[in-house]
Length: 505
Image (cartoon, rainbow, N blue to C red; front, side, top):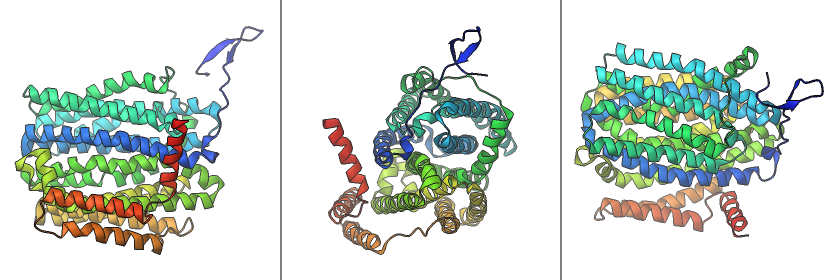
């Protein structure tokens, strides 16, 4: 059945409206620049979003305290695991298939993706609520799982309708949507905190976020963004056959923080769980940046994987180098700033989480690499390789957490997280070596990285400097030296300058 009709033929039968022919932007020479500029736009919006996220975390942690905030993060982590599996598995599949499909088939694919979401969501929601009940969580946590899960699954269904924005590289509009969600979240949390609300009402914030996203979607993606779901067995069987391995594998790289959080909620005490949860709240927005950049790059990687393996290798090399450069910078700054950051976010009661954050932030570099390399395997239709790597790494992080959390509490959980993500990145790289040319960090780039890192270490080693001053100086020195010695891939400033000239013209 046609989704839209516009008129009748001479014999009175309905005619399908022809889809406009859309230029294949992914095959154009501008695709790389569009991805860099799109990433910059979404990173800028994410920067504002991170600031709002920090404010949200600060309001939550200060208002709820260590123990109750630990329960809040436990529930949201549980729901996020389910929604991430349902969302990213289909999002990755849909993004890849849409980037290869002719324009006239896109709406059909999106309608079937939406149909799959609507079938999967109730099952996923029932599973996480059942887990919360069986695990013996308090009643307010079980009910909170139902409330928060409903809101998150509505947002996940809406994401299926916004996939064309990713494929067409219209990342500015996606950035606006992300910012709207953050603004609504922090506004609702602030209102609840001012009203003196207890734990349960905070889970309803996800319902408000879903409502705001539904209102904003036609404004950002056009009034035809809402389409009726389809349930075509053949199309959905093809989609789910790819989405299930992706969801079972690739997505797990996004949820190791949350897996450790659930382990802590079962084997540790509420105070240690709360400290780990506070550190998690401070880092999860940064972790999602890596997921976002990998999703932006996936359509290009998919097109290059089909048509131009040299282009694929070149893009993969640049993305890997940027992940390492950014990861090292974050580790340097957090080495001295972590206790101050946690005190600002959660107050003096969370200062102890600074030691957890100092360890946990190292995982961000490995998350960035595993997301980029995992997206490349998906682009090459090697998602089954990810089942092997993610299955092994998930087993590894579970063992690490089971051993380290009882012995060392929240800090042990942080070490388990870093070890799990490092193991995952290494395993994915091993599989990637078998499918592409070798991915390596060039000796020249590593030499420049070592120089920038050595200079940035100087203020961190001066014990007389206040922690915040030392961290700030370290970050500034790292960025300045990296710019002076040409550490960043040249394509990044070139693409951004091209955009600036285009705006000026």
